[in-house]
Amino acid sequence: MTKADLVEKVTATIARTAGPMISKKDCARVVDAFLDAVKGALAEQHNIEIRGFGTFKIRNRKTRMARNPRTGEPVEVAARPVPVFKPSKELRAVVAQAQDAPAAPSAGTIPAQ
Image 1 (cartoon, helix red, strand yellow):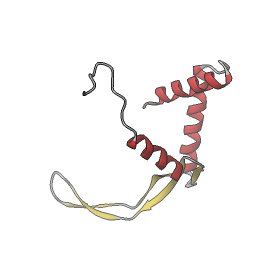
Image 2: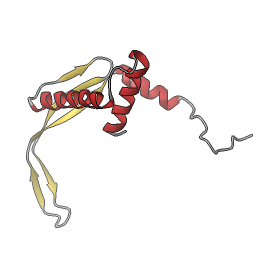
Image 3: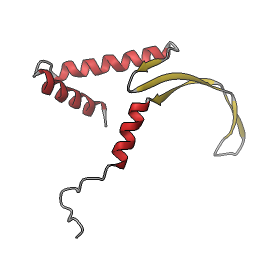
Image 4: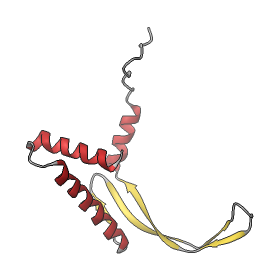
């Protein structure tokens, strides 16, 4: 799913529940503002907890030794902060439930008899 697909889904959901009160352009601004807020908070080393969805955290990776794939020479990779996402129990349950549900036959396929 791309950001454009996300904007499309959010716009459709808002149109279903509240009527066509928000344009796709305004919805794109909301999605962009949300993503910018998440990026900004992570850049400032803050954790973000969205109940029922998950937690974004910054984890510090240690310095480690790696190999240059071209030469095979050992190279030291510096310590650095990396963003990580931990899904909530609810999100894990939704994903697991979707995985366990039988897939609907697609158009053009003939069901087995």
